[in-house]
Image (cartoon, rainbow, N blue to C red):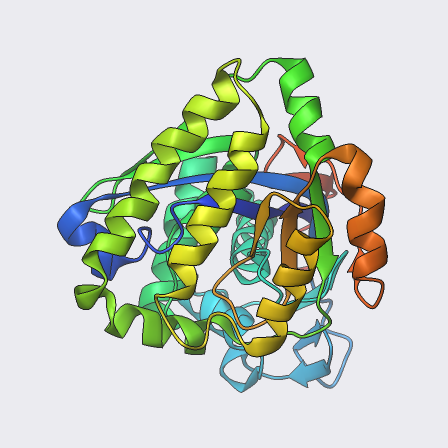
Length: 333
């Protein structure tokens, strides 16, 4: 039995510049962190005692003879891509709902690749896990996805990610003083809007209009530099919140699907209650909203948005990890 634990992520700045349609011409950069909310995958070879070869447990329970019969697209695609012919059992569960802007789809890909490599006795680097997850999602599954989520969930931590035009990338952990990092944590509020959505569908429109949004995306890319300067510096931390507001204003202009009316209402209510800024996480449309608010005004924002569920979280640094490793062969020995 192998169990992997892979973190979800919160992206601050640069989202959109990590899509191939953008970075292959301009390069890209992202500022993001992983959080202590995880996705777990349990994998083992399935003994040949059943009238099915593999069992897949997610929101459905699937019993199949061949990987091609699996309904879950990522599991089917990854098993076929890795050419795993043995019968397997895979269980998935997570701390938070899927399709809510926290990079859960890519955390799933990274965690499953990590588990299946371990099942075969292969030790794989975080970089290779990120690269394989990017390849599988973009080429095998044909999803409209960027690259930051796979990199963040594999590496973990508060990072600046620079993406070159050839698709290679550099992960630079931000060196932020412990006290300032703790202060940043206290200024952030994560709220669940209660709506999940398919990011790939929203991203498709965003990708199709990138050519006409060059100025906006260049400005969003520059905010990665500014956000980094604020965090590693000694200035007013509220500048980070104001920058989030500026970034969200730009992002909303990229696609009509990013910020539905109810999202704008939530955001405006948060500002009126004292927040400095924030954003809807992920591709948009719904999911989790990140609010930057001074600690003494936090209660007022939560009260003003009482219909939404606040989710306490902490930053994490570990990235994807194997939390249980009890190898057996496919014959059960």
